Amino acid sequence: MSLKIKEMLTPQDGLFVQVLDFHQTSGDLTQRYDPSQADPGFVANEKQEPDVLVGLNHQWTETERTLFLAGIFDDTLSFSDPNGSTYLLSPSARPTVFAR
Image 1 (cartoon, helix red, strand yellow):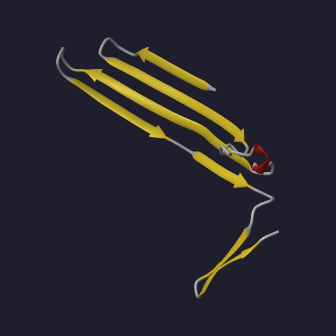
Image 2 (cartoon, rainbow, N blue to C red; image 1 turned 180 degrees about the vertical axis):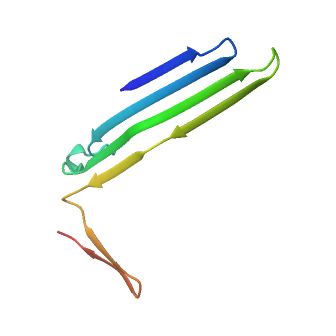
């Protein structure tokens, strides 16, 4: 979803607003020689909600302008793999792998 607004407030002042919302779920996208080696349980989720841009433009003269752009971005990326290995980390020991 996307919303984009451009508006002239006065002959010298302009406003720009853009709001974006993005959700995507994907699986194992790694290219392999043997497709049967793909991990069917792997799931990746990405959410960008909401991303907001606000811009202001003021024209003082024909050759002088002030531009201001501010934005907020919130991006979350998560993975789950029920078939994956479990890693335990300890500050004093080597990593240990427990395979299922």
